[in-house]
Amino acid sequence: MARSDTVYVCQSCGAVHAKWAGRCDDCGSWNTLQEETQSAPLGTQASAPKRTGSRRARLELVDLGSATDDPARFETGMAEFDRVAGGGLVPGSAVLVGGDPGIGKSTLLLQAAARLARGGQRAVYISGEEAADQVRRRARRLGLADAPVELAAETSLESILDGLKSAPPAIAILDSIQTLWSDQLAAAPGTVAQVRACAQELVRFAKKRGTIVVLVGHVTKDGQIAGPRVVEHMVDAVLYFEGERSHQFRILRAVKNRFGPTDEIGVFEMSDAGLGEVANPSALFLDGRGSAAPGAAVFAGMEGTRPVLTEIQALVAPAAFGTPRRAVVGWDSGRLAMVLAVLEARCGLGFGGKDVYLNVAGGLKIAEPAADLAVAAALISSAFDVALPAEGVVFGEIALSGEVRKVGRAEARLKEAAKLGFSRAIVPAGVEGAGLEVTGIDTVHTLVSRLDPGPQ
Image 1 (cartoon, helix red, strand yellow):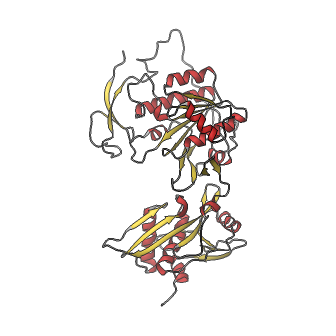
Image 2 (cartoon, rainbow, N blue to C red; image 1 turned 180 degrees about the vertical axis):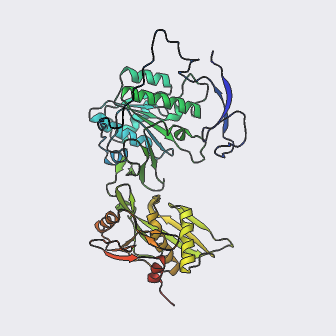
């Protein structure tokens, strides 16, 4: 009989501890260690049956120059989904789709499965959280009741694998990985041990049978369940479905993809009829934008190969208390502190006694440094109470010396701005744009000089 030991596993990062403690030494989380029984893993010498007369397969090595064909892909027909996946789903791949509960993961994958099924591919949807009747009701609401998608409500890993192995489908969606359990482990469903073991068996099935396995994973705000984080290194692609509940749009973002780029995003709009594709995200993010107002700047950014325009809003107000407040939504707070320091040290602007609020309109999260100049322009505009041109866009990276540096894909950014009706652009010096009136900025001090209204 295999020897079993009691260990304590952190449910936030998956670290294993020999004894209980209030705080995990690896990730620093408090009260996340849970007791689990650790037995000999499957396939080890203690648990695997003895081989009689069999010989191990010889390891075959090839060189890097060996000819390989590009992987075949199944296109779902949803252009935004296929864009993020790298042009379609690759047979035999394992994909993890993560996101907050209720964000729309099940709706998105049910729509993708229905389109594949209508295209002649066998699609299986296995739900561990809902009954089959609940999935059917959602399908009727989305207008997918006629799609030949095969449904099942099951949480036992062994039952799921037995059903899939009898007739391997083209794609199998398991919603969600936290609900699956294996009877070979004593741990409860949703724990790190169960999530890791179930994901490993499903990935092995995908590689052997050529089935696309899509795993759904929940991400809670307090980080108590770290299932998706544990299996990220096992799967071929990790897609995160994100968005604000107060906004109607959702963003599908690739953070790992062995068969495609990791900087693409897909934009969807949530409605009563499901998730609709947004072909022009810039128009969605700028929808409802009024006349020019102080503290507002339109940033021309890049999300993968797609230019996206969004509005950055800033408010500079006298501090009501002794300690000024810095509030940021949709941007890096450390980056904001750097821009404020440059404006103070290089341009003489004082923000030490003022509250600073920064918001990216529409709920989009911006990570690229090209937004530095747009943020600085919004801050200067709010501080001077002078509105930027309503028909202008801004982008550029700011160095600690106050220099404004060029950014990549400037031509694509300006073309997108011109297509949406913008006629002016504030950009780093040396950038040229056809059809737009370009104002080149070499330092942040130059931008302050252009926006400074002078003595009042």
